[in-house]
Amino acid sequence: MTVDSDSIQSLPPLTIVGAGKLGMAVAEAWQRQGGALGECVTKGQPWSPKGLVFEATSPEAAFDNVKRCIDAGVPVVTGSTGWLERAPEIEALAVAQGCAAFCSTNFSPGVHALNLIAEHASQVFQKMPGYNASISEVHHIHKKDAPSGTALTLAEHVKNGGWPGEVAIESERRGEVVGLHSLRWDSDHDVVALHHEAKSRVGFAEGAVWALKWTWKQHESKRFGLFNMNNLFDS
Image (cartoon, rainbow, N blue to C red):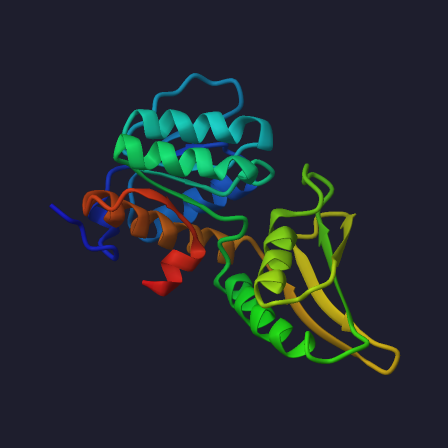
């Protein structure tokens, strides 16, 4: 039976693989909406894929964790970054194994809106000589990858909009900053900037819960493969 994407009480318990800041924020958001929470797996702890999985670990572990879920036929959503050059392998495996998987460098709906706006804006600025595009991002000192996956995705959207030049990315790790991303077009005469600031992890967590419910619905409807925020918003 296909479960309605808004009926979280009908979904299986959620397994959290990677009980760090993002993983625990997703667990709390899942429970706030009435979902049942299963196991919360920490580093080095043995686990078996079951129910529905949210994966948020490290670039080194993420691919194997996601593959493990797909091999077991368990739908999985991952927020880990730094491994997405291997996403085509996961896409092919998910289709072959009959499983739905979802990956995103950032689950915030506001960040996705920023990406779409940036793509449209790049169509405008490519027609205007004298501008250079650049991105700056700031995160907490515990973040392992730099540039952030969010910054890399933002740069991809700028390129998808037709921007012909380079998009330089500057990364800074400072304090406990949740996430700051700025896209700038600089000229000799002015600066035009788009800016996103995450006030807390709640927006990420609620976006991840949305992705989890949506991914379960795809799996139950036998729409298999690797999905992302574009697929979620397009639906």
